[in-house]
Image (cartoon, rainbow, N blue to C red; front, top):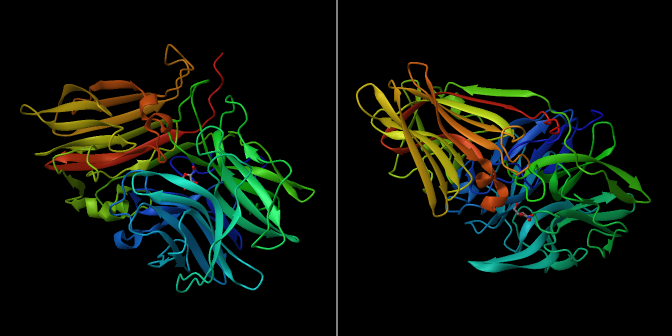
Length: 512
Ligand code: 6LW
């Protein structure tokens, strides 16, 4: 194990991590909400470098989220392994399916159609087996009722038949946590003579936490630990906030680790997290039979990360990192004559099901570029939080040999557009994001700087817009997801080539 864990462990929109170790490899799954393919699986052997090897939800009917609204869909999965089979159990927020357990021989997929577990009336299910091999689903009894506010009834558990999904008993109440709001995200572990019940509390915003209890059996009774919460970002000046929703795992060198969600806010006081909730890790030490968790820190991932797709080849679209809203990227996009084609429906990223495919923005300092040939249509490069919070650069044909490129900032009830003309039939659109140090006059105000640029056939670059990234942050959008960036079409057929993303997670030096 590296002496310092790289953090974020899995950058970009990757909340609610759960991790399992099988032989010498780790497999980690995160939430994906309204996006497909859903429930990404990341693999690592050293716990430091992670590869996105596949997704659990890769069929629309299997996913149950075709009609999920933004922020609903695939919430908070747990990944576990037993007798040669990988399991991912998940609850679908307000979707066609409720609690489902999926199985696979190979975590890269394919995953099964899933078995529904109707007895689980709640979210964040965990899967564990007792000493006799009985399967238990432990979950947060958060009851969602249409558009009414949900009700939290603590942590519950039910023994199930995994083959049929049927409950083998009435659900029992296990623990309500330490009194913080929203007890959720339970995970159970057997260690020594005890069963440990780890949960999240405090809500997923500032003050989010993890707490632990232990008991003599998988069914409890559970007694709260002496030093709860065991994980919580204390003070708003810590670089990683909202740490909670955790899973325990043994690291490569035998020491224990915890994976947890967190955010990287910019600014002090009121601060804003451009990328949403990401996956972090930290170390755990056991003292007197209870875990002591080191605070989560940002730590040296000073990599220059690049990825590029020609976009004219179906294998480019098959990369597991492409996302679409409620549909698969291959059902939204077509490949024709060596280019990617998106055909608009008369609405851009305002649509509940936009003609858009995108990738997670993974770095606060990033650059995404794409070559756009609008043909008879209108489309370009977009950044999406959801259908209310997004921004776009849209190209359409203007006078002979020219294109009109429009930058649009979209927020609820507010829309601002500016247009420029560029030379040529193709235009390169570029979206860059920069942390604010030395770039904004009121450094510390908490936003990244988002710049949209266009470069025409004559090589001239026009700055289309420069916007304060606070508007497209997890806090402003009150979002469970994160930024997703990529090509979209508004109308007609729009062709795309040469998608490139570059980012760097170097921890910025403190402003002098
Ligand atoms: C997740 C729950 C939560 O199910 O947010 O606040 C939900 N915490 O644990 C979505 O990530």
